[in-house]
Structures are given as structure tokens and as C-alpha cells.
Image (tube, rainbow, N blue to C red; front, side):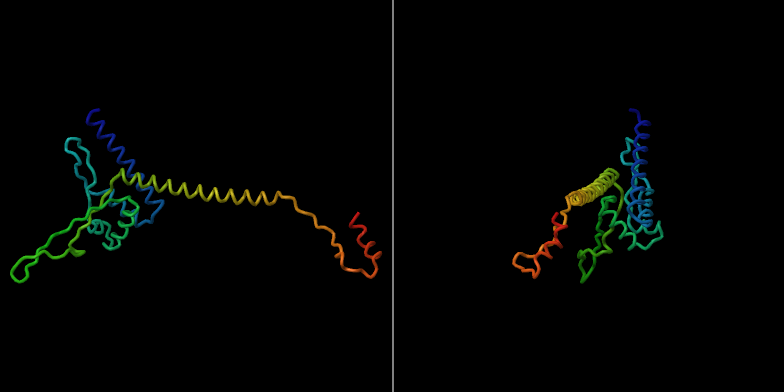
Length: 193
């Protein structure tokens, strides 16, 4: 396979992954998540392997995504955390080491939230597996609901098919003495026959 055919095939595969991620974001998430997904898809490119000529989106700092979308960084971090929890986005945390000078000597300060940078990107294969799992889980839930519904319908229809017992005529209790037994017998004669 020559270089041009390989790069064309890789570009088609990447375009298919991008369509999958856009559709997933549209179907399962809101517009704000779709915007974050678009920002990740259209990230600046870098060459993955110089010999292949294939370019991949590079990891982006969460603050640069927020600047590009003109959203608050905290909101973007929440959306990225939601996508990361669903395994549609991968992240990389990098600590920035700062040395403080106190009492004439240098010491390493404990890292704070401002000393950590989070980079986000898309691993297309992992994201496609996450979408496949999500769809499989939805299909399994629908099958369970369908099975429960058919079982309930079957039990209801079986209950309806049972013969309904006819009410028996009400006869006086044998220990009960009627003042006029022949009058009682005539009253129940048409029921008994």
C-alpha cells in the first residue's frame, strides 16, 4: 500500500470517528457538550509519526478550550469531566513544579489546583468502544423492559383465559330453620332446576 492510499484511508477513518462522536454528542448530551466536542475535534494538529505523515489532534489545555469557546473554564472543566467519565475524552495531568524560597533555602511547595494543568484530547478507538458499550447497555435495558412487559402481558392474558366460575345459588344454611320450608323450596326451585 503506497503512502497516498494509506493517508487517504487514515483520513477516512478519522472522519468516520468524528462523525460518530458528533452524533453521539448530539443524541446523548446538550449543545454545550457538542461545542466542547467540536473544539476537541478541531484541535491544532501534530504529526503522530513523521514517517507516516498522519496527523492527529493534539492534547489541549482546558483553559485554551475555554478561551476558544468563550466559556468560563470551570464550566468547560465540568463538561470535560462528564465526557471523560463516559470515556469519550482522555486526559493527561501535568504538575508544574514551583520552588519557593523561604528562609534562604529552596523548598518544593505542595501542589495546589493552580499547579496542575489538565490536557484533554480524543482517543478515537477508546471513544468508539465507549459508544459501542453505551449502545449495548441501552439495548440490554430495552430488552429487559420488553421481557418484563411481555411477561406481564402473558400473565394478564393467562388470567383472562381462566374460566370464570358461575355464582352458585344461595341456599339457606342447613342449621337454619325456616318457618315455612315449602315456601322456601318453591322460591329456590327455579334456581336448582
